[in-house]
Image 1 (cartoon, rainbow over the protein chains, first blue to last red):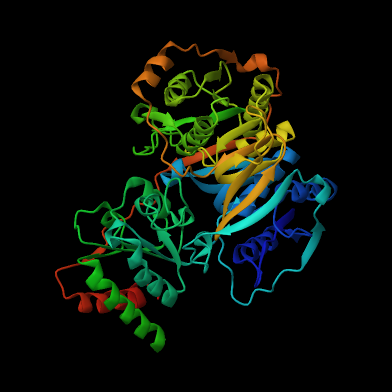
Image 2 (image 1 turned 135 degrees about the horizontal axis):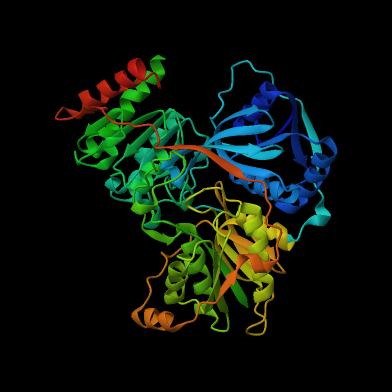
Length: 295
Length: 265
């Protein structure tokens, strides 16, 4: 079976999720890692054309993309161009008898579904779905040159978020520290950022917080925001609306800190702290610092 | 400018979703239906454009079960000018890329300059139809947008292209589309408006024409995602609750648990 993994690159090399899907592709069969080159900024039309041409010639059975903003954009349009089946945000995947069996969430995380797609198919894979074995060789990446003549849009400029954390993309982070209304105001995020910095975590937020403009939209976790599945999710001052829970309930370990013992967030927490966030947070940050220093 | 907004009617995001007894679908008796949240943001963005330039017309379309009429009525009450229901036999089971082909017919008939969709429907969470619609039309698309505005001030009512703010990691990219485009919406800056009372009265009187999906003459075959099984997410709870302690001690205890028990630190 022929499997492609589409590789995305960040400044420091291939993205982690790209390595994850490249390793999975190898496990599934005859793997090719492919990167679209010649684009300063990803745009769908210049990327999709050459990929579709190559896919028709090489006839892979399965194309994997990372379920990143770019991967989901490219994957869906490529599937539409090729007329192939498409599934997004797979958390597991197996292939048998010409079909892919895919585990993915539906209803904004409220339902876990097993679906079957007849091959050939394009599947976007959630970061962290396949763990990368340490010492795995970096894949040899074949490049496909983008076709600039297919572009119908013109890039104007990039506007960075005022409060962009600029650290780790939320979707790919193994640790997420999220803040809610219990933090009382944007000025208190310094403390959240300090903890996140020590943990190497991405910053998240509840919808109340992004709606109030305390934090940028892109940090919103939950329905109408991002779905995350880190190893450790720390919810600070988040009450746990059903829409928020849907976006983080598949995290491996959940820590919740809230002054209200009845808060719904405690229903999904592995470790809950009932108490004053502003007393707890500096003490916890200090303890984590000590633990990390000792490790 | 004419904007067509594609909406899907999905279970209200504030309610729980239960898996039905067959283990392959959701229990429809428990569901309150609403416009999918991202689609509601798309309606809001389209109406904001109309607020800024009243010569803009906003049409809304849904494809699926006849109950979708309620979603359209809601969009009309919010301020959309016209609504189209695509329904009939086979509409509910039509798969992503065939839905896109059917919607492409509607876009062509409506002579829309711009199409807005939510970034994904809140039931299947696929995020395919908007982009497949752009593909069926041969138009460019910009996904996960939060804002758009006319690129240049041209004569009122004309379409001179638009600038689109696409949410990406770390900020927004601004892209210009000089021709028609499909935009999928991440969020509107303002919350979607509530229908006004006059809006509701007006919406009640509006005719909602129904198109039979079979009469659109599209190729209804499409690769499908067959649902094998549905289950609730793994149950959680029964976690350890630390309370009533000195916060310093609690913090130290939590770190110990995260290291020794959960092994995530």
